[in-house]
Image 1 (cartoon, rainbow, N blue to C red):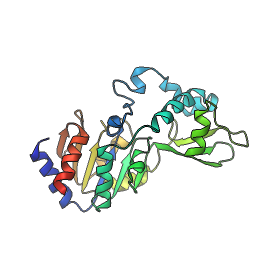
Image 2 (cartoon, rainbow, N blue to C red):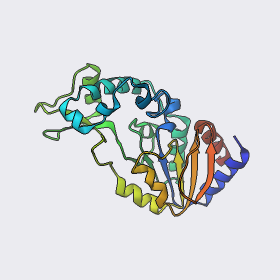
Image 3 (tube, rainbow, N blue to C red):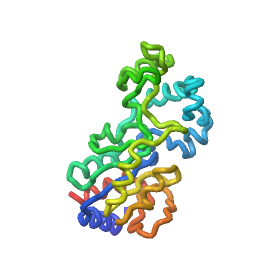
Length: 245
């Protein structure tokens, strides 16, 4: 990793009073979760029909395709661990250098790494609710049912749905995320190509400097990108944390 870019990033962090982070699927690929839009991802592999899995209207009609996906995702989840980048963000938050992490991911790895202020715009599997009576279920309860290859139902016979955002539903925490972006003097864009809205719109509202860290080019239509790192995220954040120490 370029020592110059690491040094520049260190300086930006040390100068910042209000750093906010936006993350996407790329932050979790080294943990073993394919980017949905990547070469092995859900939207390109066709192992599952993404049009059915995450469409709320289809889920209400037939939840089976979603729960076939959920079975494999939850089985995978038990084997994955947060990446070096997840841990670096947790450490930066603990040191008072990051105000919040806004994420598009549903894998819960920021929480597993220990991050406290996480805004899951697309929700996650950590909690679920019955769509009929609104009874809450925790992750363990859902996991037991899903791994038994049954469609989870509540005692009232309503379908249980994880608190993730389907197509046709509003994202979570948008107004809080927008406010964080509008007040950020430093805004990291990590592991996302910024093509999925409304999360992709957040950098447009940042008055401060933007740092992009991704393994491929990110074409942000903004003029305040101070630094762009196109490389392995874990390598960069390991080097960054070493420099900050």
